[in-house]
Amino acid sequence: MSLLIIGGTGTLGRQIALQALTKGYKVRCLVRNFRKASFLKEWGAELVYGDLTRPETIPPCLKGITAVIDASTSRPDELDSLKKVDWEGKLCLIEAAKIAKVQRFIFFSAQNVEQFQTIPLMKVKNGIEIKLKESPTPYTIFRLTGFYQGLIEQYAIPILENLPIWVTNENTYISYMDTQDIAKFCLRSLQIPQTANQTFFLSGSKGWVSSEIINLCEQLAGQKANVQRVPVFLLKFISRFFGFFEWGQNISDRLAFAEILNTENNFSKSTFDLYKMFKIDPSEIVQLDDYFLEYFIRLLKRLRDINFEDVQKQKNLVI
Image (cartoon, rainbow, N blue to C red; front, side):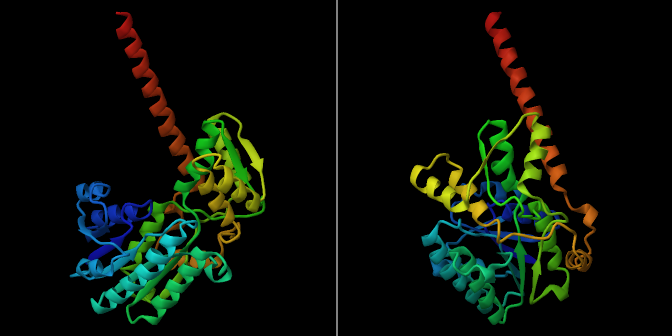
């Protein structure tokens, strides 16, 4: 089976590419910048130039492709990119996949998109879901919550650097997942015929509120967090006009989507049935506390190594 991955350099796309190559799939990645995607080539993927804003570049990328995996998405505040790439470009991709007789089109959406049509990104994703369902190409849609990887920037780094952590609704539970596990579900769907023309709500086994994540990071880091509580609309206003930190807008975007990603705090029956259908044992899924523990262990080891190197340099200078 040959795969065309869109967004292969991204947080999720690279995990899909790596796991697919490990499993023996032929992987082709649509890229605009070959230099930025060079690590994918080193892993064994074929790189092909393609630009969703240039429809004529898409059909050649699909030659000999069995399945398309679209793991790309624009940031919520990139309105021009949302229109040209996530809407117009992906409509062209869906049409090209139909003409190429692709056997499966996998698309990553977000939880509860139909309920938030006033948010451009949600409106676009919902629209693409509709277009996929209207297309004759068999599809699989995964509606996701948040990634573990994004929480490092949102919680761990600010604590380590004594920067503020901005939080809003304390009662919002979000069942985050590791992108490695999402990639596992994605590739498993290609092996299960029953997943064709289906939409799946994919989430982790436990919902977390911001205070629980902060407490976890405080324990692992050995220091207290500087928590700032602020309404989402105010945070966006401040970040837009004052740009207080480079990551401020990114944080406000995540907070703005907190209600969209709101999920139950329990491993519900529907989630259990999903794991069962994909033949994935919930115990195999990486838990958030284990993910953070591994991150802090690797980080502290790196800091010790750096400190050791600095000490050696100082000794050499003395000698």
